[in-house]
Image 1 (tube, rainbow, N blue to C red):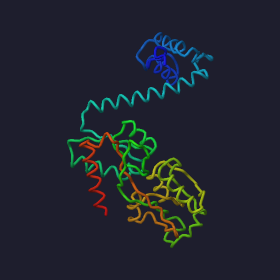
Image 2 (image 1 turned 90 degrees about the vertical axis):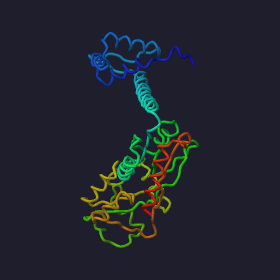
Image 3 (image 1 turned 120 degrees about the horizontal axis):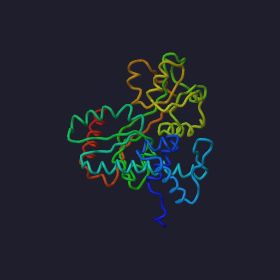
Image 4 (image 1 turned 60 degrees about the horizontal axis):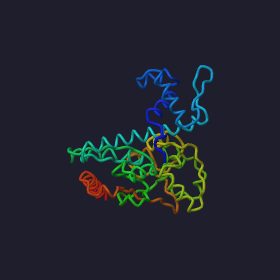
Length: 303
């Protein structure tokens, strides 16, 4: 590869700024440089790639077809650069931090209590947490951008180790306004007749649900809405006439309070496991070991 012909990051950042800020003047202000410097960097990019990336249409600069591709590449490269800088800053901060990643439902319902308990037990350690989808989290674990994860679906990667954390189950639930409130066993074929509010298709919860239903011959439910937040779904159920499949840990308080009702399905229970995932390189981390020990203590307390 001819590295001398590669664009520099300043050029890519300038192209992105011009597109996203709406012009050369606005880009110059955001980058704290003069307009001639912005124009010079854009021309350097044209030269680097051997094709014009922007053209003037009326009073605005617009991306050419080639420019649209380079702009997409610039966003990707600059976002990765930001992630790398965060990772290097983490390394400089020492060995007392843990980069923790969790699925959204775990983050909404289980993580807060865990973070509070860990902070009280280990004030010398710091956890930096974020939420995401399993596939993205697996990638971050495998590439060293995360140290440990709590997941609804076990990753499949040679550099990621998994261990069982908690047993869970997806429950069919409804609110007080639904006709099935207080009902008995629901025939499994009647699932097709219900209006559902479900998590989005790429969520781990939905992937498991779709597979479990497909295994018993139900390929499609009547889906009225797809919502990216378990908490929002609970609120919709409490005030509407829909049903949903949600994790037991997410609805146990609402079930106990009587604001949701568990509809039992004849011949169907969707059990699952929540997982702890970590990288092989992180096995000797004191902060990781302390957090995993806390997870074990909390899981035993639930039994």
